[in-house]
Structures are given as structure tokens and as C-alpha cells.
Length: 205
Picture 1 (tube, rainbow, N blue to C red):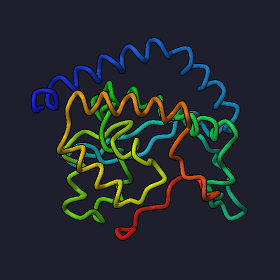
Picture 2 (picture 1 turned 90 degrees about the vertical axis):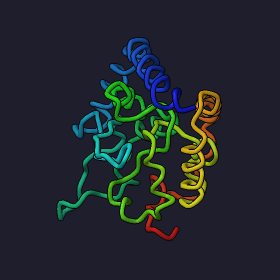
Picture 3 (picture 1 turned 180 degrees about the vertical axis):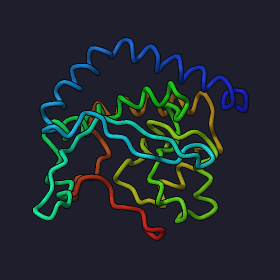
């Protein structure tokens, strides 16, 4: 397991990401052109600082799914008013995640691992929850295939730590194929609210 985690996993990540970028390059270009118009001049790529392995900060990339529209006071409108039809489609199909292939090539993240969350959550984690940073974060992970946005934060962190303790090729392969199945079915996305995105973690929920 240690050899896989410390060496083989990185080689597989880089190889799969490199091949994917080449194969998907026409799709990446087509989506970028589409979003250039759909986002009303707000740009194509969304980037944000996130904590990686050992909580080292890196910049995560996604396709941008919202405009930068503001109210009369210059404040950004709520997410629900800024997300575009194109953005909704990209999120529901997980195509907004494709730019993270370049994060994988850079070594910021892995294909499989705990999802990288917001920096301001760092001081809110318990020591056990903070163990999620013992490995590289991932595009998808054990928590994502066991509920995604439809489970509580505490359950997500419990699943993340389980993954940290059980990293292996077989575990990663299982997560990969479960992810493909769930993306195709668009499963485990909490549709009980009209709000865009999951509820923020406050250290208690």
C-alpha cells in the first residue's frame, strides 16, 4: 500500500491526466468557447486557493459556471441568480471539473482523494477531521461516491479519513468506476434546496 500511495499512484495520475488532456482537448476548447459567451464576459476559468496535502495551499481550477453580475451597490448577486444554464449543465454533468486535469499534471491533486475544501475551514476541523490532509486531495473520493452533497459534513469527513487509512489501487479503482456510474446517473446531488452548492461547514454541522 505504501509503495502505491507514495509512487505508483502519482505515476498513474500523471499518465491518465496527460492522455485525458490530449483526447479531450477538442471538448475543452468547445466548452471554453461556449462559456466565453454564456458567462457574459465573466471569463471561462474559475480559480480559488484550496488546501492540499499537509494543508499546503494551491490554486484549484474549474470551468466557471456563473456570471459576475452585481446589484446596485456593487455586491455580487446570490449564486442562484448568477449561475447560467450552461453552468447548471456543466455542474450536473461534472464537466466543470475538467480543468482540474491540469492540477493533476502539476501534482496539486490526485484523481482520487478527499475533495479540497475552502481555506477558511482549516481552523474548524477537529484533529481527526484534519487527517484528510495526510494525502493529496482528489477530483473525486470515497465521500463523493457515498453521498456527495446529500450527506452531512461530519459523515463526509469520516469517509475522508477512512480513505486516508485505506489507500490502495483496488480502493481507487472502485471509487473511479463508482464515480463514472454516479456521474452518468447524475446521482447523489441534494435537490432538496434551490441553493447552489452545499451548505458551508461551520464546525458543528
